[in-house]
Length: 197
Image 1 (cartoon, rainbow, N blue to C red):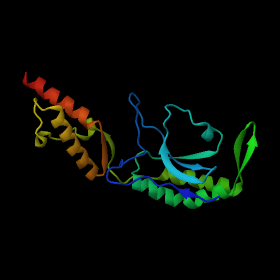
Image 2: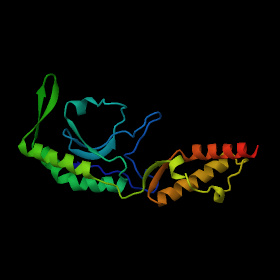
Image 3: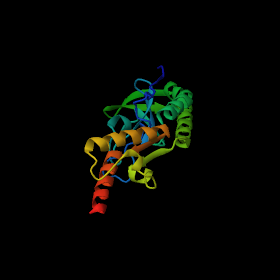
Image 4: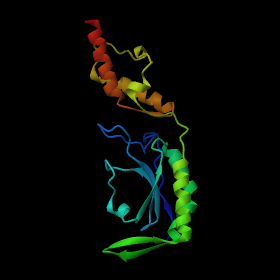
């Protein structure tokens, strides 16, 4: 079977850190991983959409292999990682046989495929980001001055949104992703209003 690498989008309006997802009321981001689908040979990177330890049936049965990687990799870094592990992924594919087992397909890896999978696991776990990472707005703007954006106690939601968009663009230019900027600025303006009362 031929290996197909599915790279992540790197367009200007694409997420800078597409593997990072943190749901509301969760203290940690979702697990990120490189995945290899043994059924069609697709190698890509993604995050788990399931909260907790659950996995899709295809992963549980070993038909889709997952190799943990840092969630703060940029799209370009994730794509570079995919290219770096492609040879090992190809060995996993070449050494895999799919067979029927207990009412479902199962993957059987030969010795070389298992060795290649060990290499994949090690390489993905060792990946690091050179970006400025992913931040909640409260931490990113902790010591910054909002005055240049013209925010006042009477700033409208439209003005707050415009300021948020500018700040997000600046953060992206600094190779960082900042979450919840609009909510942070809304609270900032409300606090300004309370301070003046």
